[in-house]
Length: 509
Image 1 (cartoon, rainbow, N blue to C red):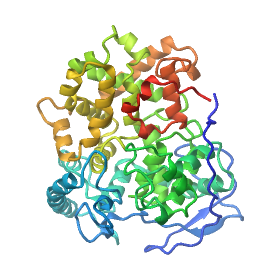
Image 2: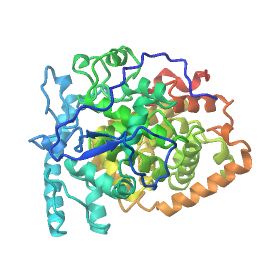
Image 3: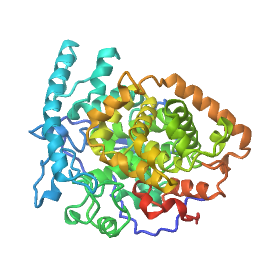
Image 4: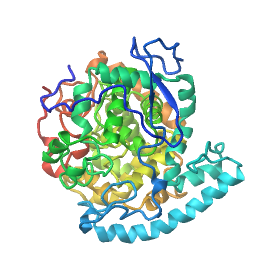
């Protein structure tokens, strides 16, 4: 099984190295090295630099700084040529095929006041903890974990502090301090000697948030769908973007993905990592985004994006076992033919072809962007149990529609499209963490124990790890469909149940 696909796209010309110096508010000199031998260990320190080392300036600040926007309003920060072009503070369109402009404006008005109130609370918390702010008015660190801090995180981190908070909670400074200059060398080696996954990365670069004002070139403003998942990411709009001048964030995304592919060759590149890395780049510097991506894939979601997708299979089995305990009526509806836990872990219900993308994409394209960001706030603070809690919450909210459905195709339609209407993150968080009928009781220890149980059961059945997939064997149709998501022969964030995707054959090339 190879990573090559039948899709042919023109590769965008790579930027020349070294990069031209970039003016920064706080100048920091990084170094790059051209001699890359092998992927260093996660905590390895770098060796002394040779005489071929080049000195360059790398922008330390995030490519997009939310606090640079004068207003707290979530919408209409960018010039509006027509109502459908209104954008939120992150550069995404406020109107999608699932949410109208009027619906967004009505929600944003109240949420704007909520954000202002929460910011005052956070200001007071940081002041009380005597934590200094940097020159951008961002905390240099965050308080130790506590019930108070957890409550604050669940209610939302201020947008301009998100990148710093995510990086801090993920122990990013530890990785950064243990590996000085490593990212710059990997980025340099990736550009000068592209990794084996470079073709896949190049294909997906311009399918990453193609309508976001920070990712798309100015001459392709109206050529792409509104959000990932709302339409095909490989249509004419994406092809037009592929030949347009690249924005700085797209160039940064290439460097991060190339560096990651070299650093973690066992994972390499998997479709959806471009969206995760792209969202990180909106809130933190390149080097921070790289290490945070490493932490996500190696610590929070272990093996999730590896070639055989075994981590995705394991976590979907864990989700189904949790669903069986928490919402038995929904479980009975989506897995009516599964007779035992043993059968469940080795032959997952077809609906997991849909829910697997929730985890692999970290809910990007599954929920409106503000809901995704609020989930990430909790995810970096509380680990992967948050994804399971949110997944159960979505299925719980869909329970009446799922129970009322009469055909499996209806269930796919509900599970794929209903979450895209969940505009209000406060309602989602309340449903997840409420005392009665919420899912805050699902602990990380339970997730770890169930992952171990599922892994052991699957090992007892599967003798060849490289043939492991969602239906145990890659030769099954479901296995081929899942693997197609892995290497990008189809756009994972653009699957549409109404197109009867899951009944079509998607053979591997």
